Length: 140
Ligand SMILES: *[C@@H]1O[C@H](CO)[C@@H](O)[C@H](O)[C@H]1NC(C)=O
Image 1 (cartoon, rainbow, N blue to C red):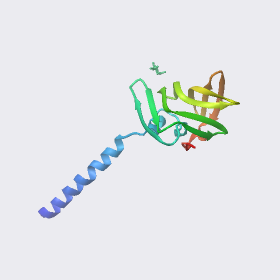
Image 2: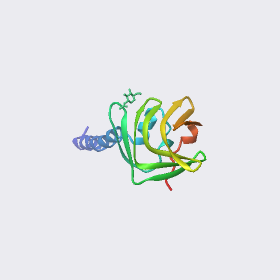
Image 3: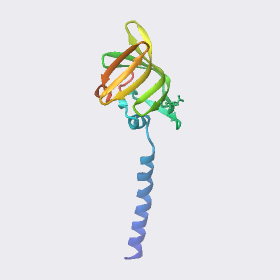
Image 4: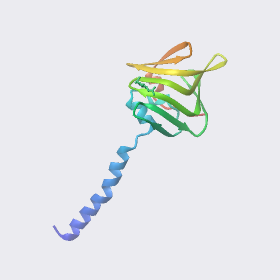
């Protein structure tokens, strides 16, 4: 092989490698949700960042508070959402509430069993198909 072709090939490798390796390592908050078995639609669009530690304790950030309409319900997200996530189980949730009659009640806990998503809302329980939450709702 001529030195010129060799030079061309090696520079091609150098320019291609970094882009493919870096994009695979950055997980979005939605990817993290999915990796624990939850549908991405549990979080609205517009998450600006998140932190998670090894025990699963997390904080997710939105630009501002956010109201969404999903599954015939009104949900409200605060600009900071905290909780503890593990496989199929989201506990100690703070910052997400649902309107029940005239009142906003905090969602404490969400669990997944097969295709069912269970919400614990104060003394109430509600369950939905995970398909209902397969897309992130938009704030507005
Ligand atoms: C988070 O949940 C896991 C699994 O249920 C539990 O072992 C852990 O202690 C919890 N962490 C906190 C900070 O509550």
